[in-house]
Structures are given as structure tokens and as C-alpha cells.
Length: 375
Image 1 (spheres, rainbow, N blue to C red):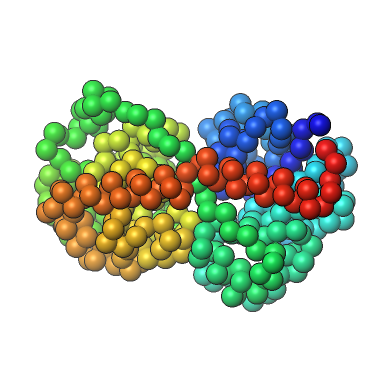
Image 2 (spheres, helix red, strand yellow):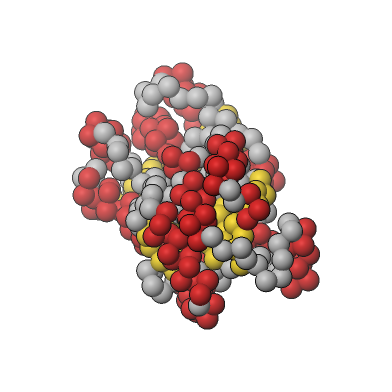
């Protein structure tokens, strides 16, 4: 038996959750069983490099102007003609379009598309188009229960076509107390400081970093530090807001970090104040680090964080309630540790990378068997 050839199609490869899950697949799926190529609009940064290090060939196509962009479809059809994939696996609207349309035209045996977002404001036309795509493929996967509900209730895709595979994150590497202390010292964080953490791209309309900054200013506790790991187009706006709020002494901007384990390790509380999230990988990552998570009650976050058990769910764009939850955990370290322990148990059971890859491999093999595809 030869290798199962998989052509994955996504959009930009930079530092987002979709790319991270594809990297997880590349690392864990057995390399003696699967070969992966990946199309994208553009590829750069550490995740792209890590994918290539895992033997994944990245094929940049340029930006897709609309779902029927013939120039992009022609390129993908040429790739299919040469590579002859057994499976085509799309993600994000561009990747789904290529998988449904070009995958069907070129008769790729198994075609899977994936909804990776929390589409709060998607037009009825876009929902209709996704429904048409679903008729051309074997499965439409959902990355969380919230996304599954969207596919069934809003996009009105047939139940038989929808399969939920919750996203997963790797177990973190162990960090010693010596390493933690050295990192805290390097960042200027005192021994008695309590660290609230944020990790994500600085896109404020999505991640709502400014709500967290306002919450920190409301708490107004000197021993509280906010450690923000990430970068992006709104970095300057974040810096200006920090100055306006007068909290420069309490906020540490660590910039983008390809390896965040050491930063998670020195946090005491974690916050995900997003306006929308299809899943919320970073919340699961924080739970893997035994951190209580305060998250917005939106999208997939509602299914990751158990309110009052592994942290708190708060209304989006409400800094005052976010501040109240931070105060509760500051006042009760025992509760904070209890929530962190419960979160770890929940994340290991439900959101591990190993479980995620087993589910995807099972889907791949099951569809190949169902379609009687000989490899």
C-alpha cells in the first residue's frame, strides 16, 4: 500500500488557528501513511517554516478575488492533475471553494470542507453558497459545537454531511521553576506579582485587546501585571491606549513569540476577550497550562470554558464585568488554582492534539473505505 496523498487548501499561512491545526496534523499523522501538500494564498513566518520542516510542500497561489476566481482554480487543477490526491481537505472560504469546485471537476475521490470561523454576520448569499458546496463534498467538518449548530441551523446543511471534530492543542512542555523565575526576572515581573495573560494577534475588532486593557485599569491593583504576547496591525493603537489609561507600569508587551510555552508558564490567570471565535484554541492552550480562563461568551469559547468551573464566561465588550472576574480570582488564589486544575483535566480529555488527529485520521480512512478508494 502506498501513501495516502492529501491536498489541503487554506488561505494565508501566518500565525492563525487554522494554520496551527494543520501543523498539528502534519506533526502527528503517521508520515509512513500520509503525504501532505498544501495550497495557500501566501505563506510566511514560523508556522510556514515548521510545516515545511515536517515535509509539507507549500504551494502559494496568490490572493483569491472571489470563490470562482478561474486563475486560482486553474492552478489548483494543474496541481491535482500532477499530484493525484486521494483526499482534498479545504478550510476557510477560499480553501472550501477550491475543494468543492475544482475537487469535484477533477474528480478527487474524497472531498472534505471545514468551517473554521464563528460567522456571526455572514450573508444569506454566502450561507447559500456554502450549502451548495456541501452538496459537492463528502463531509463538512465543524471545529466546535457552536460551528456545528451554525452549519445545521443557519447554513441548513444536511445532518448526514456534517461531522464535528473539536480542535486540539498539544500538551505543553514542562517548564521548571528555575526557568519560570528567570523569565519573570527578564520581563521585570516581581515575585509577588499576579500575572494576567493574553496571547493572540493584535486585531482589535476580533480579539478586543482594548477591553482587557480597560479591565486592568478598572481593577487598579499594583501587584497585577498584564502580559500580552502577540503582534499585529493594531499594535500602535494598543500602545496608545495603554498610555491613555495610565497603566504603562502594569502592561508588558512581549511581541510575537513562536514558542509561547514559557510565557504561559508564568501566567496566573488567562483572558480571551474576543468578539468572536470559531473555537478559541488559545483558551484550550491556557487550560493545558493549568490556568483559569476568563473568556467572552461567544462562539466556540462557550463550549471550551465551563463558567464557574474552569473559569468565567463574560459578555463580550464589557470591561467592567471582565474586571470583576479578575478581582474574584485575585481575592481567592485557592479558587484560581481549583479552576486551573479543572481546566487542565477538561482540556486533556476533550481538546488534545492527539485526540484531534485521531479523529481526522479516522475520518480520512473511513471515507476512503466508504468510497472504495485503492491507495
